[in-house]
Image (cartoon, rainbow over all chains, first blue to last red; front, side, top):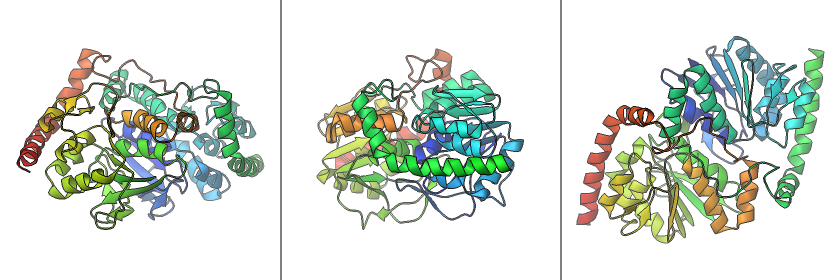
Length: 226
Length: 226
């Protein structure tokens, strides 16, 4: 099985590095990080990572993984990223969208009539692409695997290994990476967090929300016209 | 607050990228990735990351983070890494060891008489450095914060933000990264995983265990002689 991770500037790196740690441990899986060029790529908060292949040289993949983050919003309105995503997904056996990565799947026309998860602050935007927003942490509809925000990509990748290989392999990886979480605080979703914490998150991301809204509208128009 | 992450070849990248995603979201925190040179660094499973500073140019830090992985075993017997770790820890307000990163803290003489956590497959090695192995997912002894394997670094980083800033800031980050985990399978520790899964992990890492044992013995001798 060959896995291609999309690697774009200003991605949220844990959307990629969480599932990568899981999928890279699956026996026989090979992995590439794909970008337009081989230039280093900086995450939204400053981790610089190297692509291993480019749009021109990337192999078709069995599993396509699309992370999220602020950079996704730029990809939504960039025809190169939208068409590369659509092209790779067309022959992939599985497509995984993590966090707001599902918006790029939507812009590529992959979510029409499908249930999909997304970061809680961007989930409603999925309807612009004809998707049915799903508040679950992990959501499977056909061969499209989408997850909620950031860390949910780890749960999704373990679930995916269970489906793609077998549950024992997923359990072995889960034990290797000691994934028996003990979050120090209750919370982690808008319904389990205190309301004032939810409000602090909303206040802190007002500008990002406005940028994303505009990008989604533009991407949805292009998709409708395609 | 300034945070230095040690970045060495063959590290387990999620030991670094999990805590990084949390600490990078803490208001006012700046972060460097430190390596002997600015050359790219490859994780044990192939993610290539860029250091931002070197041993010679690194700033003293308030928080030192030491990830684990197979590459830690090489660091244990490399005087440059051991002395850099000791030197940085000497002036840091907090020292965080993730996974087998705690072995490097031990080799640097930081764990004598202290309780410390570690990946379950390497935890017993801590005694070679005078530490008291702790089976908890997160363990705090004085200013030394250590965690169990790989993903436990996320729990530890959230806990650390709660201590270093305040709990509300940690809760806000936890909600931003939707850390309300739903592991798809029961397990994730040797006591909660089926015994045949534990055995599969042990069988798969027999060679690594032998290499690590030798490195720990050599590092413990050097520490005793220092």
